[in-house]
Image 1: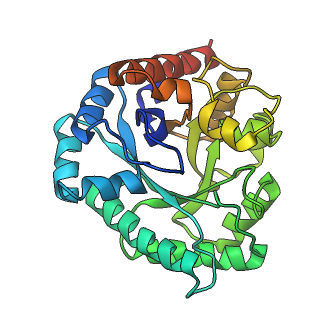
Image 2 (image 1 turned 120 degrees about the vertical axis):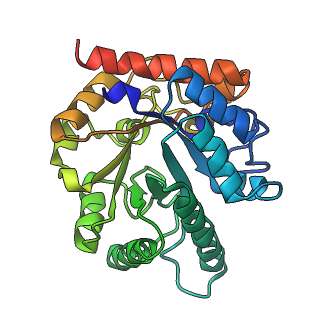
Length: 289
């Protein structure tokens, strides 16, 4: 069943890390995260680039994969790559290319499900140039890993913040290993309803993440996005409807739990994992009720 195919994504179970500023690596050891994930029923985990870099100071990718395998986990999300469309030689592109190599190596070591990319910084780019860069990124990824490349549609992306623009990018790129990452938080905040998702051809629906919240925006939208999301079922978004439409399109899973919440990050590691799994699994039961 699809509810058995859940991933505990990085920011949901990272503990008291600083999202996008300061210390982004988790103080929860990878071994403990994997053990708790398997204990509650998650089938996979997420890794953020800064946490990978921190872990590589004391263990290898092979060590990390062995820990992951030992508890029976299967799926890995690797993130996040931005600025891959910036002109070559620019400082942002140099950093992006270095991160690209790290994410490719990690995806290869884990046989990852996908690499998540997008435009969190909100860097402007003409859509045609962005599409060409995405196609090149997908071609480059295919030379290193079987992981898909999932472009995440979000409000902060000044280039791709509508479903039409997102579909244009992945369709025009024409990359068999490239597609869209859909996060219910971003969908709700962009006014994209569950029914709107029926417009996405199955071959372009690479990845789905679940997160809840409120429709009315807080004054500081960045703070709201990284600190005030809610666990599935604890907000105003119709998570069961999003799930049901994705299933009807033919999306087979797995599904990610992506809840960026300052309150959640304060909880003990076992409670974080327990709450994330229990609340999300309940949405799948509701979607077929």
